[in-house]
Length: 492
Image (cartoon, rainbow, N blue to C red; front, top):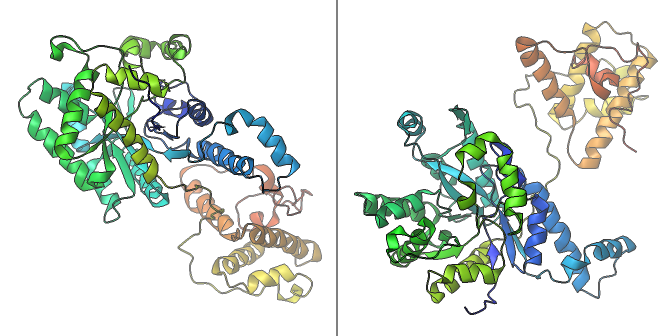
């Protein structure tokens, strides 16, 4: 079989975050990037089962390596000793890491037509939560992906002891709206609606052709023809003389290529990785899955996961060429790079965001501490702030001071000033006003928690904050018990 030097991006991989519902993967998120580089890939995507929780960690690892790679490759950059130390530590990866290496941050969702259908049909045993892969092209696409995932978790329910987090097709369409073209989609594995329908079609089941056409049309209309890819996956099996007795993955692949050509769609190839290396299959992955009795009884571990590792490009190429034409395999490799080229290099990092209470009532600062403004300039800053939430924060402190019958003395007033200084300067440091956070916590404590549960006297370092006591976030006067304010919020 000819060797392949084609570029390849692995776009369907799982890490330990896919284990939130049941045992599934033994790959650490950061290792996906490391191993992809070692395997000579041009990029890699994380697509855990309905969770985006690994995205921050894997993105940090990727951008850390990319920053080091730029410094490593550019002799004109004057690196610090710390840079040199870090480059030495990562030398084995930096030497072989492609300069065009990319990271995809995706999600393998459970796509359904309607919630009512799946809950009603479950009793008859025909319920299917079809796999479907989404990959954002850019930051806007990732925003849409987060909304889609939130929608799925909003549909959460438990069925026969299993957590279900399905994405309803109409919800997905509604979230994308007119902002199409920011998400790439692939038809996914044998657990997908596409694979089920294409196998039904191959086996001659009545109505399957119409259903298959309807599904493909929905995908094209929802994502755009250039953004919907037909996914092929490898198998160790060989095609049988009676083709329809071959392994389902072979039947699916052969027919998927035909369908893709008929609709003018691109194919792509993945390994749906759940463990890193072939030798990890039994001694690591199967052992892990069998550690749960339910998994060992209910899942076909050997067959389903046989090729779900990050294999070499040559091995993947050879396995596909066992039952597909070489040109079709090459096109599938090219499809991975079409996805590569569409993914932009965006970062999930953002500045700190402090949520704000949108329901602040009308109020007027009382000027209760006006006589101390000269000695206590930060109380004055809050009183004259352009931010309504900071003025409201002072107003709540004034109310609490009166309600709790506190004395107008230097100890009390200057303590308020010190704590407001810490809040003010910390806000300047992060370029985000912090006072709204305390306002929201006060709402949670007084309007929600007291109505449904008991609230403790205080907890943690905020116990030392006098203003928290005045706002009734805590119920212990820290001045009375000589508790330090600086443990809660200290700006150096």
